[in-house]
Amino acid sequence: MNTRSLMVMAVLAAAPARAQDCEIVLHGGKVATMDERGTMATSVTIKGDRITAVGTAPGVPPHDACAALIDLGGRTVLPGLIDSHNHIVQLSLRPGHERRIEIAATIADAQATIRAGATSVPAGGWITSIGGWSPNQLAEKRMPTLAELDAAAPRHPVYLQTGFNGPAATNSQGRAFLTTRGVAVGADGSIASGAATLAALGALRSLQTFEDRKRGALDAMKYAASLGLTMSVDKGGSWPATVPGAQGLAQLGNGAANEIDPFTGYDHFVALNNEGSMPVRLRIFYYMQDLKPELPFLTARFNNQYPGFGNDYLRISGVGERIHAQTAPPEVFEAAVRLTAERGWAYDQHTQGPEDQAAITAMWEKLNATIPLAPLRWCLAHMPGATTETLMRLKALGVGVSAAGGRYLAGPVPRTSPDEVPPFRRLVDSGIRVGYGSDGGTVAPLNPWAHIYYMVTGKNNAGELVAAGQTLTRVQALRMYTSSQPWFTRDEQKVGSIEPGKLADVVVLSADVLDAARVPDEAIRKITSALTIVGGKVVHQTDVVRVRRPTGR
Ligand SMILES: [Zn+2]
Image (cartoon, rainbow, N blue to C red; front, side, top):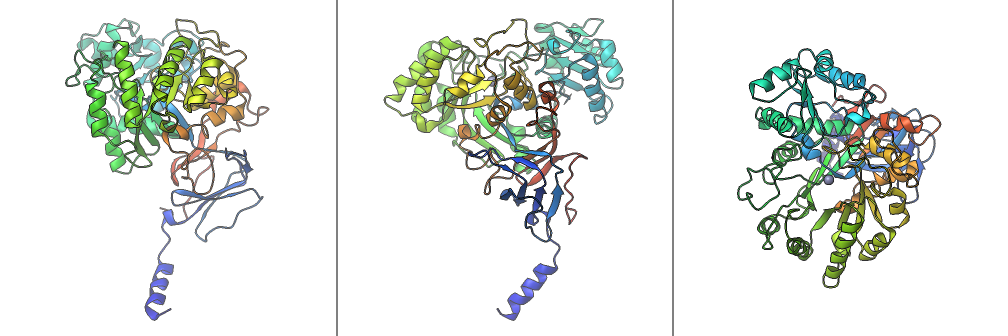
């Protein structure tokens, strides 16, 4: 070694370590790795964006001099949760400051969320909670009133909405603004579903800037991080009538809460990714709306987009959950499915029940004779009432399915049997590749713990047993949100389990979901994250577990 290299080494040794060069060592925990063997470990070591070691011995594992050592005090650790079918992009586009009342059990709970949420919203700023909840989950079984919303947020306009198009409710400040925009609002703050709700939503959207959209995306991602959800696979939404060339071609959103512009609706996420400020990961599936067998939109999409383009935070993964307009003739659907196979894209297909599941399976089987589907990672989504026969045929094709939480919300149409919701146990027992999609954002909660509760208890948000005989164990339900998920987006080498070499997406839970004696079923929905790490970065922490970097960076 020459003098010069000794000098360089001396300089390096003298420089304070940068935080990203120092390990984070979580030890003294109950680490459910979700690896293939179901290893339970005690420690996880993180360096840079990766997991570098997983320990099973008691005590603090070997570590660098500058490591941040975090004693977990026996707390439970999981791989970052992955949602393989949700609508976080719809959620990000909500006007106002979104404060989710997804698991409120009473109007007082909803008020508490709004009251706490208001503390970080400038006076006069809109507080919203749009989609992902229903009055059936509240003990009062009704929408909150103007007086109740005034009590929760006297200095802010408030707007609550259920589903795609209402009903909605507002407070005094909100009513004053909306009535000047010609929206019909009752004296009690009620806004009827349909035209009145769409007018209210449109009025709020007219106030939104691009910066608001970026904040909305950050709010949605921070909400996800606070619950341990570290990757969302987004399945798009209906196109607005303003999309150039879409008039007459596409099935339009008509201003409803599930609307996304297919060309500009992701720009705010791209901007955040370019700034390096995505706290959690996003995978995009493009929702397509062709009405003609020439497939002008789908063809253009495939001609101008690279599948798999992006980075570990934001990536283009596939097309779906629709690849044609619902109102199109059947030959359009068949042409779209064939083109998607020819171009080799991953694809997710919405289903309603056993009949369309069987029909789509038959179409895929026919196509499989000329283009093998197994390498393409296709997925039949939602799967209410899925039959064993269809599942076996799909399994033989080498495709996957995802159970969805869209029917977790008790609605005006009672869904009370496994024929109307995903038969979770039948899906798992079939041995097919199966993951879980919350469908969260508009029709269901984004909160993964609401859905883990749904799979474990078979109960919907009103507490009604809707999946009798089809429930999963807690470990099975957790696998539906972890190790089962990354196959669908070709991320299985990177996320879904706590193993050396994988991206360091790790969550310390507020309560031990694996201990039914201490966390009864009804408490599962209240679980949150005490500490969320994504790619080695702390993206959410609480006073329960805090990472203090030795260098303060
Ligand atoms: Zn969906």
